[in-house]
Image (tube, rainbow, N blue to C red; front, side, top):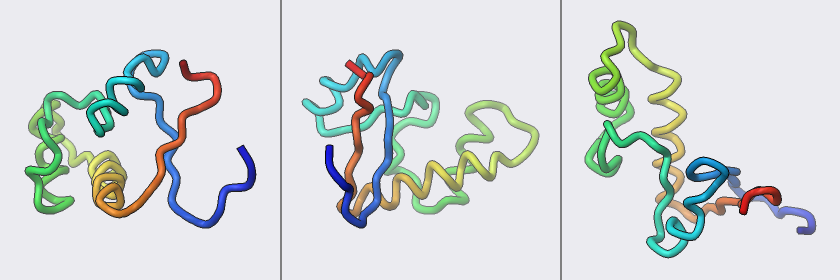
Length: 90
């Protein structure tokens, strides 16, 4: 791959050893492995999403970082972004 132009890129490996790449591409989705949370599109704010994480995993604290970073990924995913497959993922 050559030089990457300005843009937003996320490098992910869905599933152990990225074994879910083909399924993700086929279905037009990205799996994060957070089944307890359900479909992320049901949350209207980062606060709602963070609360769902707290409840799903029984946290006593607010999982602010998990909620914020994942919610940001979800919000920019609705824009045009690119997910890059790592070279060593099959």
